[in-house]
Amino acid sequence: MNNQEYIERAQRYVQLSNQGDLTQIQRMFASHAVYYSAYFGEYVGNQSIHDMMCEFFGRFQDAHWQVEEYRCIEERGVEFDFVMTGTNISTGESVERYGLEKIFFTAAGLIEKIVVCKAKKPHFKQ
Image 1: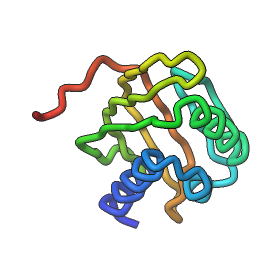
Image 2: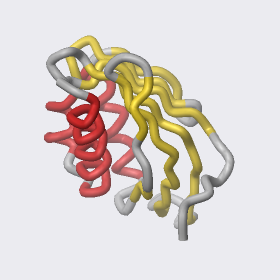
Image 3: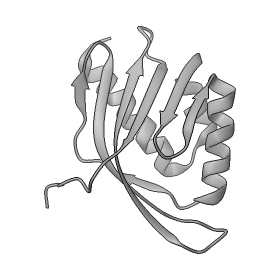
Image 4: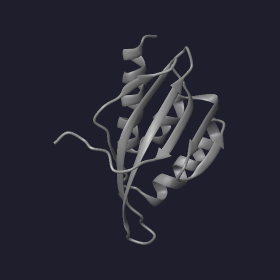
C-alpha cells in the first residue's frame, strides 16, 4: 500500500464514524489493535475497542468529526486534527472536543494502533 491508500483508509474510518457504522468500523481493526485516547483511556484488542465504541456511540448518537486535512506520518501512519461534536443523551449536554488523532496501519491496511491526543481548537481554513 502507498501513502495515499493509508490516507483513504483513515478518511473511510472517519466517514464510518460519522455514520455510526460500528460493524464496518470493527472490520477495519486488526485483532491485536490498540486504541489509546487521552479522553477515554486504553483498549487492547478488536473486541475491547468495539465494546468501547458501542458505549461511546450509545452516549453520543449524533457524534460527528470534522477533519480538513490528513497527513502521512512515520511508516504506515496518518494523522489529523479534528473537532468532535455531539450531545450526551444522558445529560443533554452539547460537547465539543478538539484533538489530534494518529492512525497506524498494518501492511495489509488494517488499523493496528490509534492514538488520540487532546489539543487546542484547530485552525481550519474558512
